[in-house]
Length: 87
Length: 269
Image (cartoon, rainbow over all chains, first blue to last red; front, side, top):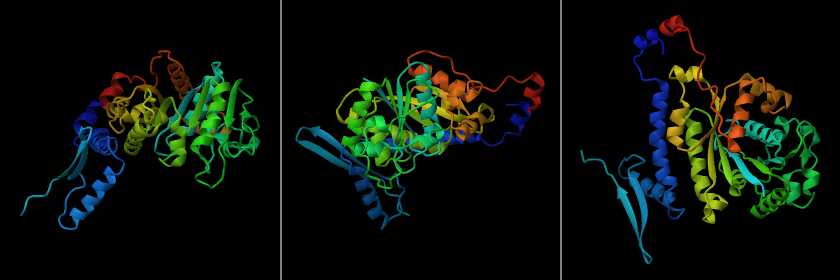
């Protein structure tokens, strides 16, 4: 980085923006695609998201679905929805 | 038994075929009996990059269907001893590659060869899944660019869940990052993700960094794998990566721009 560039610099370098954006999306997709559990979980999550969106506008990461194996004969399906504050 | 290595990426156009050709050729140059298998059914291009497009008679799918035997379909490279190419079929039948068929061919090749390089198609469809299913190792070809890095991460997830090694609970597929089309000048200007940035995000070991180079287009124009052009930076960088693939430790080159004089460093240029 030359001295002149340094003084001209106002915005973040494009590469830093790229890295931050990637870190966020990759972390989100890892939890979505690499989670253990049945293959239908991501689809289930998407469908639930679509149903909720018929009634209230939420972000695509506001719904999480997780399946936990508590014991050999007990698994718990956990559904977490973050709804926006009531205006 | 051969080492089965898939060259994959998720995203298209990042240099999978160029890398498969270069790495396969380099391994053979160093005395390993090597076959490069094109899994891109319907869009075969390895034959062109290797300069053997006029010698294709039978292909991968012919062998699976029993219309030809492996020796009829394998093309022997005329430049490098011990190097063979198995071309993909141009059929439009997307389900032409069956798991059983691919397994049988890879088993047969395993008896003969030291290395089997599987050149994967882009995407995450049947062809790509078949290319990676039987792999012992993966070379994930990535450009320092957001969509390529994201797709590489998806492919790493698929390697960890959909490969034979994952399904059978064996030792996981060994992952290697190959960063291609790298421009140190643009990295230094802050315009391009650096090697470190990509390593931070994907968190897998670095096999090589191939600089953006005029030699790559020239090589594909001529049908000569770029590793045969040892005058070129890209050719040398591939050769370094091939040494690392065989367990040797080689310093990374072409990561920085040439040192500028003090005047240029102060005033830019």
